[in-house]
Image (cartoon, rainbow, N blue to C red; front, side, top):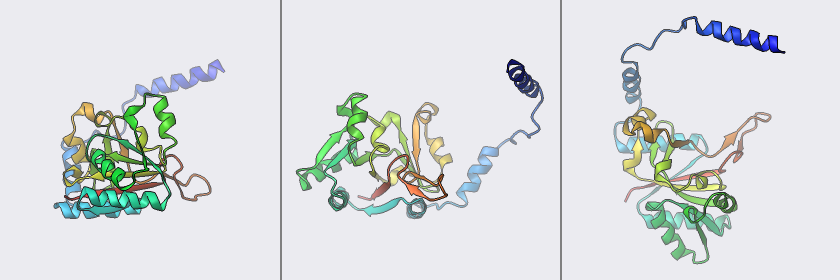
Length: 227
């Protein structure tokens, strides 16, 4: 056994002494990629919004355009009632917190659970029982329909993947064209502590049958708030 291990380690060590046969990236390669992406992504907001919607629906996400917080609240209330959800977890103190107050006024009996009110591991136990969540996102990437959540901007990441149904609200200024543009906006330290969400959880590992909700939310509903 030891001889096999030593043989493997020797091969690894010998391999590291040999220069890679792969060429180094040419100077300006990143800029060439960024320039190429800008030629296939819309330049205007409406085009980026429509691209995000198209790509999100391809990965089984849901998109809705809303012109006010009241419109978002009414849509969420309808979905909660249609699914007989009686509780909703909330994370963030921004737009979603304001919309949560409007939801409560329309559903006085709704149980609103704020993630920051619980310490870990009690937080995980409590939030795992809540079927839906209303969460803030930091950015939305149009060309890959991806939500970026900076952990520095959220009290907890658990509501982003524990519930069966996730509602999130983005605003026009949070929409970026590509991941290159996203990372160009972020300081390196912030980018280290971030999660990217592309559609609801999905897998086809077993029998190549697509299953939603295997590792996270079954539904992801994104509201574009154009107030």
